[in-house]
Length: 560
Image 1 (tube, helix red, strand yellow):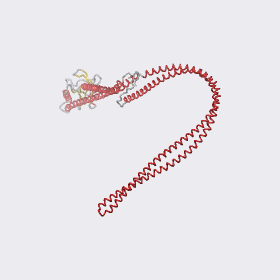
Image 2 (image 1 turned 90 degrees about the horizontal axis):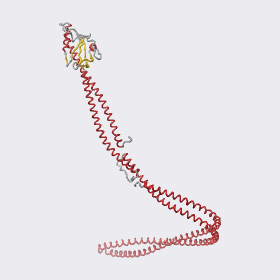
Image 3 (image 1 turned 120 degrees about the horizontal axis):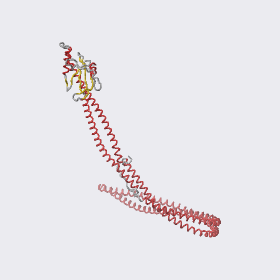
Image 4 (image 1 turned 180 degrees about the vertical axis):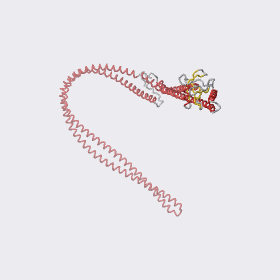
C-alpha cells in the first residue's frame, strides 16, 4: 500500500468495500437460493410421493372393493370364492406396469396361483439387496391397518434395480394382504431435474449479479477516477510547488488556486500561507544579507582605519610624552594666572550687585507706568462703549423720524381726499413732515459726529493696547536683565571658587604628569596589541565577506 499512488489508494478504498459487499451478496444469494431450492425439491418430492401414495391406496381400495362382494356369494365355495377373487385381482392393471399382488398371512402368493388353483410360491423370506424383508413388511403394514413399504426391486423397462413404494391393506373376509406398488425412481429423476434447474437458475442469478456488479464497479471506478482527479490535482500542484522549492529554483510568488472548501482546499490555503511566510522570510533574509554586506564593507573600512590609527597612535604616544613635560611647566603659569583671575572676579561680583539694584528700581518704575497705561486704556474703552450706545439711540431717533415722516405723508394724502374740511389738517401734516425731515437731518449730522468720536476712541484704545504690550515687553526684558545680572553674580562667584580650585589643581597636575608619563608607555603597549587585534579582525572580516557572498547565492535562487 505504501508504494501505491494516492489515486490507486482512493480507487481501492472505493472498489474494495463494494467488491466485498458484492461477494457477500453473491454468497448470501447462493446460499438462500440453494436452501430455497432444496426446500422446493423436498416439497415437490413430498407432493409427488404423497400423490403416488394416494394413488396406490386408491388402487388397493378399488381392488378390495372389487373382491368384497364375492365373499357374500353363497353359490360359491370358499375355495371358488378365493380363486375368483384371485383372477379378478390378477386381471387388474393400471399405468404401464401396475398390478395387484396378494399374500396370505404365511406369505403365500394368493394372486398368482398354480394351474391347479393352489396358492403360488411362498415369499415370506424374500428380501431386497438392502436386506429389507419385503413380504413380511407388507404383511405387518396391512395387519396394522394399512401402510406403505419402501424397497428396491427389478424394473422391467430398464432391467435395473429401482426404488419402489408399495401399499398393503388387509382384505376383509379373506384375510389376505392386498397391495400394489409404483417405482418411484421417476420422483428422484424429477427431483434431480428440478435440482439441475435450480442450480442453473442460481448460476444465472449469480452471473447476472456478477455482471451487474462489474458494471457498477466500472461506474464507481469511473466516478472515483473523476473525483480523485479533482482531489489529486491540487495535491499534485502542491507537490510540484514544494519540489520546485526543494530543488532551489522555487518561485515564491506562485500561489495555488483554492477552488474547494474541503480538506484539499485547506491544504492549498495552508500551503499558500506557508509559501507567503517563506517569501517574507526570504525577503527579510535578502535584506539582512544586503545589510550584512554593507556592514562587512563598513567593518573592513573600520578595521583598515583602526590598523592605521594604531600605527599613528604609536607615533603620537612618543609626542605625548614630550608634551606632558611641557604641560607641567604650563601648569605653574596657570596657577599664577588663576590667582590674578580670582581678584578680578571679586571686583566683578561687587559691580554686578550694584547693577542688580539699579535694574530692580527700573522695574518698579516700569510697573507703575504700566498700571497707569492700563487705567487709561480702561477709560478709553468705556468711552468707546458709550459712543456705541449713543449710536444706538441715534438709530432709534432716525427710525422714529422716518415713521413720523411716513405718517405725515399719509395724513396729507387723507387731508387732500377730505377737501376743504381737511385743509387745516393738511397744513399741520406739512409742518410735521418738515419737522421730521429736519430731525432726520440733525440725526445724520449727530451720527457722523458720533462715528468720528467712535473712530477716535478705537484708535486711542488700539494705541493704549500697543502701549500695554510694550510695557509688558519692557517689564519682561527688565526681569530678564535682572535674571542675567543674578546669573552673572552667581557665575562670578563660581569663577572665584573655580580659580581657587584651579590653583590647587595645578599643583596636583604636576604630580599627575609623572603618572601620565607612565600611562603613555602603557598606551604604547596597548597600541601594539591593538595593531595585532586589527590584523586578526581583518581576517575575520574576510571570512564574513565570503559567508555573505555564499548566503547571497543561496537566497538568490528564490524568486520573491
